[in-house]
Length: 397
Image 1 (cartoon, one colour):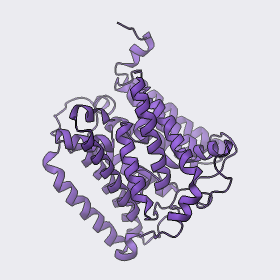
Image 2 (cartoon, one colour):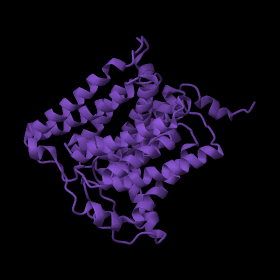
Image 3 (tube, rainbow, N blue to C red):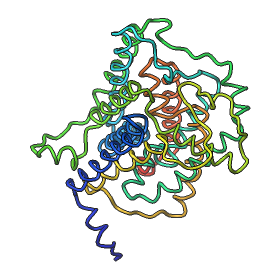
Image 4 (cartoon, rainbow, N blue to C red):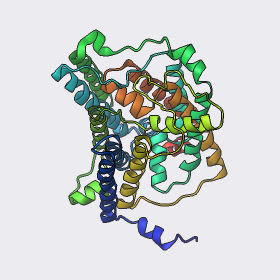
């Protein structure tokens, strides 16, 4: 029987006080950035949003792969209802605010092109998320929980981004450059687009309601319910929707793909695999800006990832979910293959589940629905082909 070091044994039992301390330290860092930057700006908000993002994902264990697996194998729609809650809250707060005040959409709204590559990229992303047992956010969360199996997947994600960037000029000219960017308010108005999307979400909720999980009653204290007991997926999804809307209000769409793509571009350029100028990405396209950086710096792109990891780590420690686990050779191969598909799909689609789908639906972008549908199709088809329910269950985040 192997023994873990004493410090890891301590982290494997609930430590809510330590979780609060880690989150407080991270939030104190936002005030430090505010002081350095001369005000509460991009880096300060990125750290706060990243921490909250990590908390929501770890507490609700949100994963689109798990959502479809639970429905198909366990007849449990809880996770899917969580994602629908995220879509509804994000749209209600974002489009509702725009309609209520007669505002134009944010300059960097995630209104993406609907080109012939988008459903292909979404499908590949879905397949890759099953093979690697989760999406990009899931792997970052699992790293924060001590799962080393996510490490090769994350390395492969960056390889997938680099691969997509090597043929980016072709992607842009062949698919993205002249593709339409349909925006529902153009046809329905802001209020009409909000009503149409909420109606579509309501139909989906009604179809899934019969399989909703029965949540056990709990008389635990607030600290235990927040930091130790798992959250209902709908609560985590609602928080994610609030974060997406708040990020729009702060001027920076929520998501981790832009941050990953920025680092990947630096790697691709340094290795001579991508040119200095990448059309569309330099100035920004569909709310996604991937600037060229000369080297590593604590930009808001880096800070939001750090905040996400800190928030998820704090909750993993607080709930006793932190545990170092190794990786087998077979798992490593699966992570490398699936991670590469994730990175390529996300870069080619100009986003992933949070940035492309949820943030897109929040402003009424058709591209968000197309990506969500094609990714879900890739997940469902792959889970079906896997056949063995016990093997498919391994795809959970």
